[in-house]
Image (tube, rainbow, N blue to C red):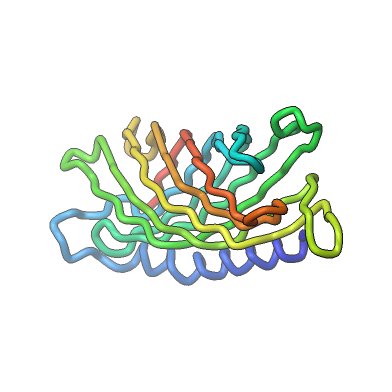
Length: 198
């Protein structure tokens, strides 16, 4: 798992290394001038996840998002998040998940740049560990799977370089082994601090 995670992070860093310099250099041709094309967001996240039999439980954690806008409201996003629960619905089994996802985000900014609304569609990988993942050859304590994350959110400007992420809601689909359909449909909620750079 650590080797796969480091490979994903290095791939993401290389991707952003190619995209973000272009975002800073390319001047938009629309009337919406991009004054701060690069944003780094630190978030607190709470995720409602499902267990076998339709029982739900909460995970809590944090994340980092790097967003580069390169044409009007269109941009690219890299999102890394980690979440934890020590006890899934009284089973005595914990769960840690790290997700690494990338994809497009479209942002609509109010004329005075006070409010920004966005929507995004991301894909990547989920790494589950410190838990029990059943399989055909027995249970393991760690597994990885595809991760798909689709959602939207709102930022409110505090100053020229700082905004509040007042709300983000995402549907997060993972496919970690669970002895039934091996699919988890999660609701992830987040808020945090947005730092903007030119």
